[in-house]
Image 1 (cartoon, rainbow, N blue to C red):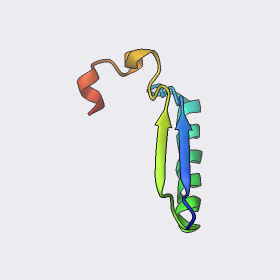
Image 2 (image 1 turned 45 degrees about the horizontal axis):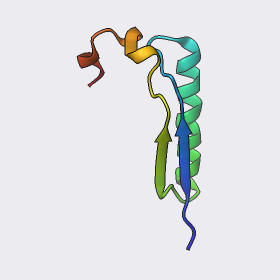
Image 3 (image 1 turned 120 degrees about the horizontal axis):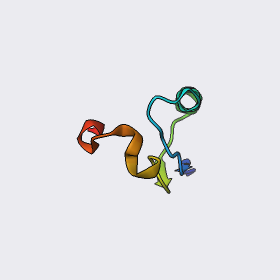
Image 4 (image 1 turned 90 degrees about the vertical axis):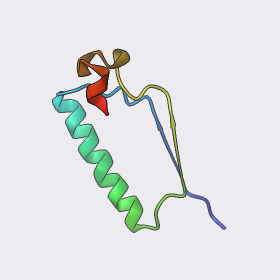
Amino acid sequence: MMLRILHLSDLHLVKENPAMDALLMYLNRSMDEIQKDGGIDLVIFTGDLIDKGGASFGDIKKLF
């Protein structure tokens, strides 16, 4: 049995950033390709998801 693991780390997402939009677009395309190839059994995310405590997102309640 093979276990397929996806490890993501330190994305440091920033709101309304063209470079971030491109990164997420390519990540999404890659995830689609991985899914077509048999999917992922486990996703591990380590590090920071958003940059600078989410300062660029304004009110933390707007994230959810």
